[in-house]
Length: 117
Image (cartoon, rainbow, N blue to C red; front, top):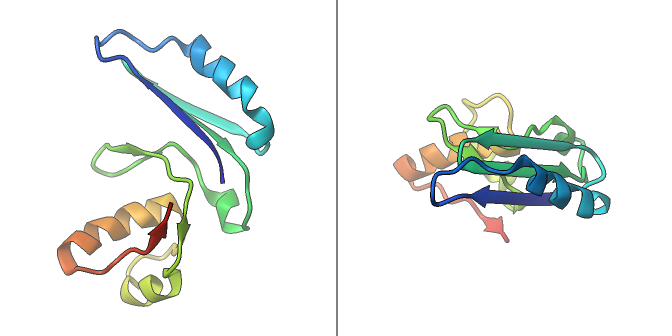
C-alpha cells in the first residue's frame, strides 16, 4: 500500500519536478517506507511505499515493463495461489513485475486476475 501520484502535461512541456516533490512531502505520512519517482518529459510519476507484507519490500515502483510501459499498482490480488499454479514459469510469484507478466499471459490464455480496487 502507499501513495501514487502522477502528472501528464498534455502540451508536451516537461514536468515541474517541484510539484511532485511538494505532493510527496504532503503525503509522506501515508507512505513512510520510502519514495521513488520517474520523469520522462511531459510525464512524472511518484510512489511512496507503505510496506504491509514481506514481499512488498521487494517492490520497486514505478515499474517499467519489458515493452516500455510504466506502471504503478497499489492493490491486492485475491487469487495469487491459483495464478502461481498456472504461471509456474515465472520464478517470482508476487509484485508488479509478476502481475505485468501474468497480464500478458492472461490475454493469451484467458486466466483471470481477481483484483480488488
